[in-house]
Length: 432
Image (tube, rainbow, N blue to C red; front, side, top):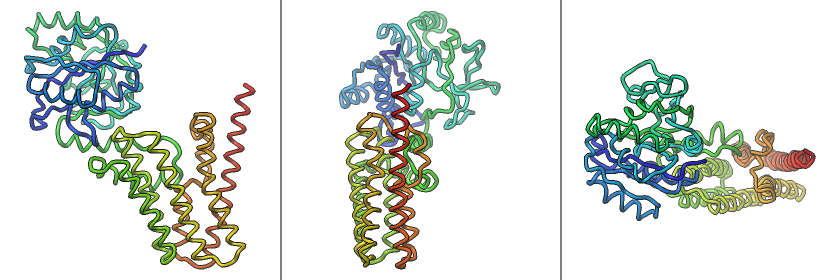
C-alpha cells in the first residue's frame, strides 16, 4: 500500500545558495518543493508535513497557500542541530508508512513512481547526475544499511535522500534525542535503525546545494522530458539533440503555449515561402520540425503537460503540413496527374497521425506502446519533413515530383501496415 503522508525536511539555511530556502529555488520553471509534492501526489500521497526553520516559515506558508497543497508546517526552533532532530519533530504528525524526503532534491517522474513502492532507504548503484565525492554513500549488508556517510570509498550505492519508513523509526530518534541532546543527523538514525535498502538504479535524481547544481538539475529535467515513444529516426538521432539544447535555455523563460505558437507560425511561414524560395522553405520547414519537440519538452520539464495542449499541438501540426504540401504543389506542379499524386501525399501525411491517434481514441492506449513494431516503420512526421527539406535543397521539376511520389507511397503504405499490425494485435488479444 502506497504511503499517504510525506515528511519533507527543509530546515537548513541554504548557506551555499546565498541563504535562500532551497526548497523554493526555481529549477526549470518550478520550485523544487513543488516538483516533489506534485509528483508524490500523482502516486497517491495526499498529505505533506514540511519541517522548516522560523526564518523560512513565512515563505513556505505562502508557497503552500499559493498552490493549495494539503500541507502543514512544523517549526524547528533549533535548525543548527542535525536533521535527525527535524524528523523527530514530525513524530506526532504521521502514522503508519510514510515518505521521508529531503527538501533540496530534484527527482524525475520515473524515479518517484518506483521509489514510493520501495521500503526503507532508496539507494542508487548507478548514480548519473551527482558528484559522487560529495554524495552520501551507503554500505549494504543482508539487504539493510550497514554504514552510511560521505567519507569512505568502499560503498555499494548512493543515498538518494528518499525514504519509505514507518512509525518504528521514531523509537530510534527518541533514543538519539536523549543520547545526543537533540543534535544528530538523519544518517545516524538510518544507520542505527539498520533500515532495509531498496535499489532504484540509474533513474534521474540529484541534490541541489549550489548554483552550479541548478544548471545540472535543469539539464537533467529537460533530458528526461523527452517523450518515451513515438519519435521517428530523425527525431531520435538529430532533432532531439538540438531541441533539448534549445529547451534547456528556454525552460525558465518561455511557456509551452508560447513555443507552440512560435513553431506554428514558423511552419506556416515556411509554407508561404514555398511560393517564392523552395530551398529556404524546406530549411525552415525542417527547423519547425526541430522546434516542434520543444513545446512538449518544456511542458514536461515544467510539469505543465496537459491533454489539451497535446491536442491543440497535433491540430496545428496538421495545418502546417497540409499548408506546406498544398502550396508546394500549387507553386511547382502543372500536370493534373501530379496533382493527384500530391493529393495522395497530403492525405497520407494526415492519415499517418490519424491511424495511431484513432487507436488511442478507440482503445485508450498508446499504439506505439502496445505494438512496438510501429516504432520501426518509416514515414513519421519528423522523417517526412527532413525528407522534404532534402528534396527541396536542389529543386527541379524531377526532384519535386519524386518528393510527392515518395511521400504518397511512404505514407499510405505506412497507414496500411499500421492498420494491419494493430488489427493483428487486437485479434490476438481477443483469442487469448
